[in-house]
Image (cartoon, rainbow, N blue to C red; front, side):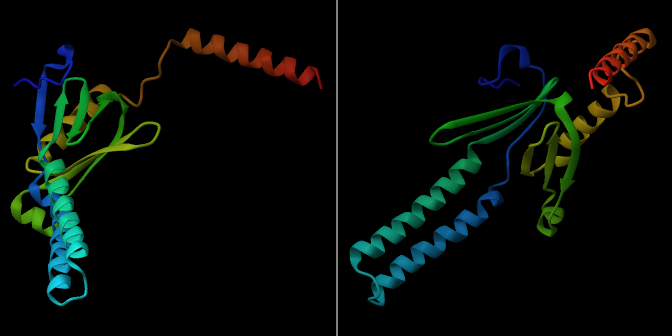
Length: 183
């Protein structure tokens, strides 16, 4: 598997996916509503031909943009990073190190349960998140990140040796003594 837009060092792809077309359902509903309003407004003489054409044209643009942005979205998990790339008029590529993921969660709607789709949310250290919306094999992506976190982040271990921490403690104590003497 090769993704031309990934850097050469990120070629070890563990998982890749795309959102379901149902992700664009809200823009499609809006699009249909605008087109019907534009056409209906012309036939019932609420709108002029120019106005109704403009409203219907706007509806078509909303639908094309919504569907196009879903079709041009890709999600990739490599050995070291999580990638999300969306391109339609412009390209937006988001890269997050897996080590920056603090929490993972997934969700499914009723329709998602029936169709086997769900969404994964990866919450990042320092705020923010990256979401894989309505993907087919959401359990695989979720498990990859969760397993990586469990295997690589040992919460019981402190960085450094006991001697290093004792030296830091001595320095802090000296600094505190100096600050309290000046008062």
